[in-house]
Length: 166
Picture 1: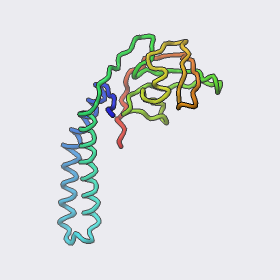
Picture 2: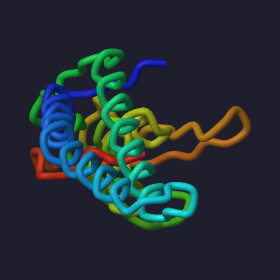
Picture 3: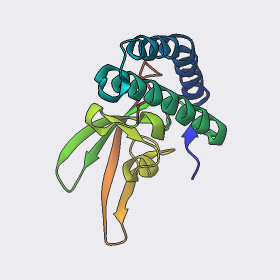
Picture 4: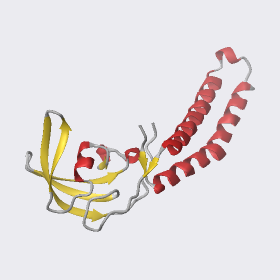
């Protein structure tokens, strides 16, 4: 499976990779060297902790590089009157008689607790490309779906959201 990323997502990931290679890696290597100089490695907790941090950083770098390498680049451009990536969408959920607002984002930035809904989620798939006033069906699984009405679409652009760590 390929992750859908915008050019901006890729840029943020490349910036994180550069920071991790130039700053974090240097500090991690220094911490390992300092812990190694303390003597007996068999009972040296600082050494194992420093090695773990160094390995975690290297793993994150590999993960980000793989994400970029395998990504499918999607456009974050959308028509003014339709729901697209980086738009804040307000929907009326008929079943619950309530409104909900969320921002449509790529899978890498999805965080439902912060109101960032992935375009790959059932709600994201349902509203993507639709206009104010449209009634769309949100298919949760084969047995359950519900209808929502799109009430408002705001082009909120992209704020400085960080790419979610794994």
